[in-house]
Image 1 (cartoon, each protein chain N blue to C red):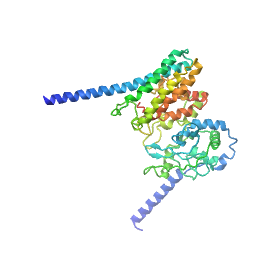
Image 2: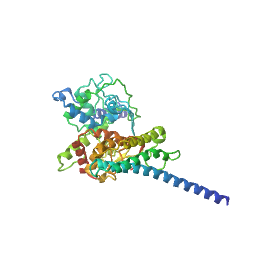
Image 3: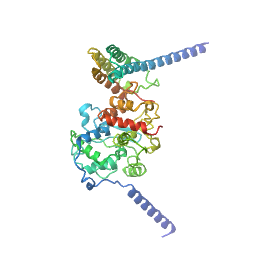
Image 4: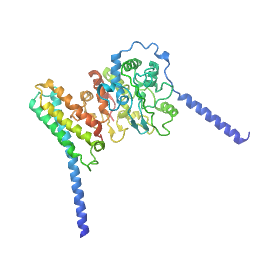
Length: 303
Length: 145
């Protein structure tokens, strides 16, 4: 073997080791069935609260559904993003088209690990980057509640993403860089209400997904937590909701809680855009939980 | 001379258009503020921050009905890009936009026909009117700041 041959062999070996290391470090890491073997009895009422806090209907109900029809999680929405168009799937309890045959461990793997039923990486259009904060008990309760909803046999489209975003293997790298369960802000001496608010906002409520700016690869700029961002769906902006926000900054905690309940700002302008769906969901929460969200939003660093 | 005339005419046209554009945008904002202010009047009483005043509720609902009737008049062709918060979706769905505005007026008039006698009845008024605001803003308003 000549010098060239040896050099080539070395390169191939380095390449193979590198690829192996990449695949190992970025492998999907679902839960195993035993992780949830002793999950305990679900609290369906709490599951319903998590369902509204999590905003499942905003993406998974049929786009034109109103009222009770929103409880049919048939999918059907086209979710536009700078990376392509995502089609949130049918997550109704239908055994074939939906998630009726899923186990709790599989559901938790999707919600908290970003791993699909076939062991594949999921796109963070499913905000597991936020749901990762959810407690196992809340995941259990949510799953139990969703089992009580109507079935739909609707089959949704595959995500429509251009190269290179259509390569799921690359998602492992993205998760390696950006996916963690760190608190998004560290708040010393937080009251119980602020802690509850932090859980709801950073976890199920996934507020940061739209309200926090992202870098060119779609990772959060966590140093600008909830500081506002361009509208991912097109024109316009998603506002800064920290105490430094031009609009929301002056609102009292009471104002924020009233807005989440009624959809009206302190000067009786109304909620608009994608926030309308979010506000309708938040209106289902308890008054205490809305107050907790407000307390947290007043406690975070101003931007 | 002819050139000067043409330039003057052009300038006047441009000035006329921009004055018209400003006026259109201002009317949109004025009508929205009128409806928002009216909701604020009712909302403050519903929340118990102000004492119940049936006359004020009536005036507020009349203002909301007026907004519903007049609002689409300020969304004619050629007024798509005035730099305000009106979404291009309005002109793509003009019939729906007009129908929603008419419904706001009709809902306000329905409440006028059965004015509540006390503050307890204001929750229902808010519930009847409020979804019109958010429903339309969901599709047709673009937040620019």
